[in-house]
Each structure stands twice: as C-alpha cells, then as structure tokens.
Length: 472
Image 1: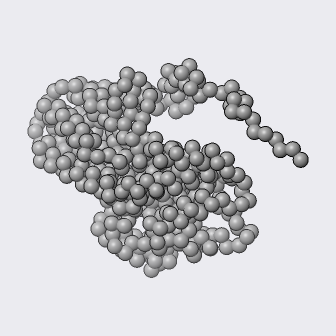
Image 2 (image 1 turned 90 degrees about the vertical axis):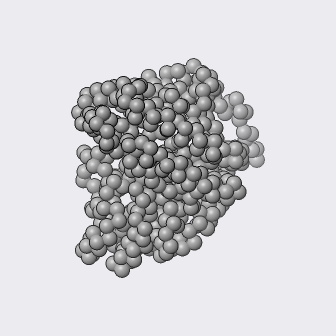
Image 3 (image 1 turned 180 degrees about the horizontal axis):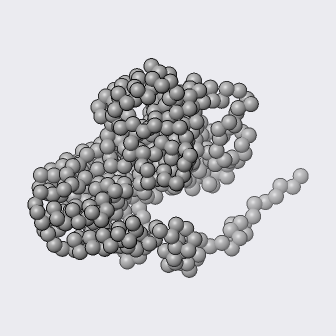
C-alpha cells in the first residue's frame, strides 16, 4: 500500500500570494467596501474623518502607513482583550495549524474542546457544561433555546437598552428599537427597566416566563445593574421555575476587574452564562454557552437528540487553541488584576474632571469598562451650542469629542450607542499607566477646547449637523 505524499507548500498554495494581493489591491479598501459590502460604512467613515489606513497593530496600538502610532481604547468592541497579536496566542495558532489535527470530523471527540470547557468552568464552579459556537450572538441564541426547552415556557424577559446580538432570537431581546425596526415578528418577549424587581415579579406571576437575560453592565450607555439586583432577580426567577441568563459576552473574561462581572455580587449563580469576544484572542471567532448540568441533560435527553443544537464550526481546533491560550495568558500575566487596577486609576482620574468641566456629566463603570457621559452645560454660550446639537441629533456632542481624540491625539474611541451622549472606553486589558496618562491628557485637551467657546470642535459640529439633517 502506497501512502500519498503531501503536496509541496508552493503547490498547496496554488500560486496564491496574500502579500502580493494586498500590495496590489490594498489601496482599494474603501472602494471595494463601497461596491461590495455595507456601502454606508465607508460613507460614515469619510464623513467623520475616520477613513484611516492602518497598516500594522500590536498590543493596544495601531500604526498607519506613515508610521504614526494610534492608541486603541475600543479593542474591537471588546474582542481584543489581550490587545492585537499577542505572542502566546499567535504561537498557539501556529502550533495547532502545524499539528494538522483531524479536526471537525463530526464523529469523534477531540481533546481541545474538553480542555477549554474545563478551563472555563473552573472560573464558574456552579456551572457544569459548555456549548461552543462561533460568536456572542450565537451564545445568546443557544441560551434562549436551552432556557425555553428546559422550562417548557416560551417568553423571555430582557432589559431596556439591552444589546445581546442581532440574529433573530438575540434581536428579540434587544432593547433598542432602531435595531428591531422592520424585522418583526420576533420571539415572545417583554422589556423591563434594569433593576425593576417589581416589574419582574409581575411578569413572572403570569407563569409563561422561561428566563430573564441581562448584562451585568449594559454595553449601551455603560449602566450597571443596581447592587443586589442580580441576586434578588435570581431568587424571584427560581421561585417561579424560570432561569437567569447572564450575558457576559463583553463584560466577561476580566473586563470589569473580576473574571465575570456577576462575581462582584455575592450569591449570584446564573443558570446560563454567555461568553465570546475576548475568548477569541482577536483571531478566531468563538462563543460559549455555559450552563447547569440538568439544563444540558434535558436538552440532550437521548441519543436521538444528540445534534438537536449544534454548530458546523463550533469547537474547531483553531478557536479552541486560541481560547486555551487566552486563558493561560490571563492566569500567568495577571490580566484580571491589571484590568482592575488600571480601571480604578483611569476612572478616578476622569471622575476628578467632572467638577472642572460643565459639559462632563458623569463617569461610571467597573474595571476597564468605563462610560463618560456628557450633559447640558450651565453657561449661556455653551448651552446654546449644546441645544443646537441636540436639536439636530442627540449624540452629536459625544461624536464631536471622539473625532479630535482620533485626529489630534491619535486615540481611537467611539460613542456608546445611537442617540447617546456617552463615550464607552473598553481598551485592551493589557494597558498600563502610560496609556492611562495619554488618554487623560488628550481628553483634557479636547474638553478644554470644547469649553473655550471656539476652536475646531465647534467648526466640525457644522459638518455633523449637516449630515444628521440630511439623514432624516
């Protein structure tokens, strides 16, 4: 019997040269996107001056084609928890590719998914099993399905202003009408105010609630669940044989200064937990739904139901290797402790500015998930300009702050949500005092300009107002 030899690297590549392709066509990036993808994205980027050409990235920094350094305070909306191109994660991916594993045969049990599940569950010892998918929204979809099947009830409760993803099930528990408009009918659902236990009790008495899904800290606006709310909600839900689902897609894996945000509150033991984003290491999409043993055993109740919930690319070797490497780095390099310390430093320094600037209303959040909220000023001159912006579109002042942070100071941030005067800071968890100093100094400069009554910021506001009016 003759065994076929592997093809040479050149013939395997089939003549494909990624470097040559990027060198030849990379300059077309915005035109290609306009022609073939979401055409509104490049339009928006051109309008606000965010149409940069980034060539390289490492840790919490980007570099453009001219070698200018940019500080990333957005982390890909939380995906880049360890920053970009962490060497440990890179090596793990090289290793798993070089291993040429027999991956995704569908009819075997590879070791990496079990090892990653074991590592994840060690951080939430009241949970027993994991389902691996490909994204945060898929993790939420799995939790919704599991909760409805396990309880035999159809309705899911969620919180106003919540964001859990944009696929149909996750969209059903999205608290922003702008995302839901035009996509009905959705799943049976009811929105509650975050922290409203009386409303929760009223809905539970109807007897058809499968679960409440909630972010311990909402990404839209950076609003934290009130102290004691998660534990009290959990007790009410269990009394009515309903489940608590915690969406830790953005808040999990150290973001808030503990491994999970719910761990800030004693006695909270959710029935299902959704994670994703930072677990990927910024490389391979991965999502995970963690749950209690009885829930999984009810869903997968027989061999006939072995594939009743599955994902074609779930548990793939590259994603599992990335996840294992991320958790190893977090443990060995004290990432959670760094997030807590740098978050406290950044928040305290920003909070100290609230009394200095009348346009700065509030600084809130935990760890390295911080919201900076702007509000109506007292002085007549500033108030008239604020009113002008609000009349055009709520949220324009926050965007007016974001733009000079990038253009003048080369710091990437973004507003926390549509029609919100809030900037959300979710930098890589590896930042240090140097990055905190750089951001606070830049933010102070921008706020000085905003309060001066003139300058480039207010000139730029005319562009934002014109664009807002044109889009009505």
